[in-house]
Length: 249
Image (cartoon, rainbow, N blue to C red; front, side):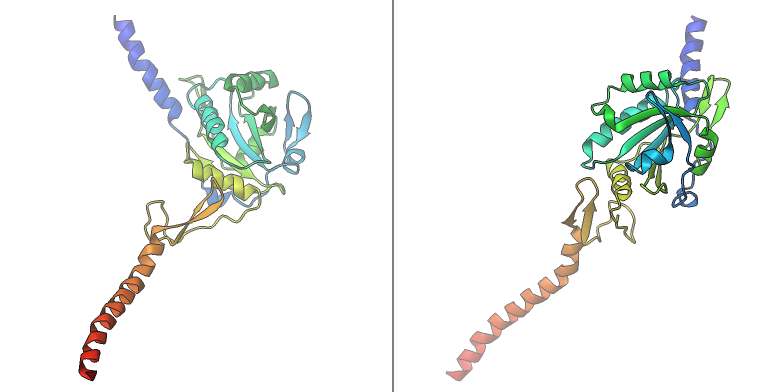
């Protein structure tokens, strides 16, 4: 009985420790820097990172195959969210941060995900993992109590010139991920002086998922005074006209 209670307490604690993340990257310190040209081993070949991103922009994420708490849920999240976004012409590069992983481990990881479009995804390992993680501010450390690595869930958008454009940490909204993909394609992503989707003073809103603009509530607020003024003038003119007509008689 005591062993059962101990297990019930220990397992959530281990899971919680797995989700305890080291220092998270500050995006503004790493964006617009060139990603190191790491040599990557895939199931089919060894290839430099530059040979991948010059063909297509790259969405880079760092995981490892023995990580059930963060890596599997995060990859499933990416798979599901990317299906919602109407952007093509990019590759998702999944690299292992664990030196124990080999290419076969990463291939098995891809098969478990049951990707609807596996040709858009690349799984591999690299000996240059240290310089790659440093270039995007990705910090991880070994935790003996969980026999695994303590690390954040992170994805970085890399354009066709090899520059890091955006870094997203954690499970973000679909719209944030869509912004990264569109910026990787060279689209201008507008920003607003007042942040937050709940802001009511936007005249127009940009939908990064569809790539279209739509009228915002701020547009109505902006023209409400003018509309009320016009109604007032029309009302006054209707009152004045009859009275001037009576005087002429």
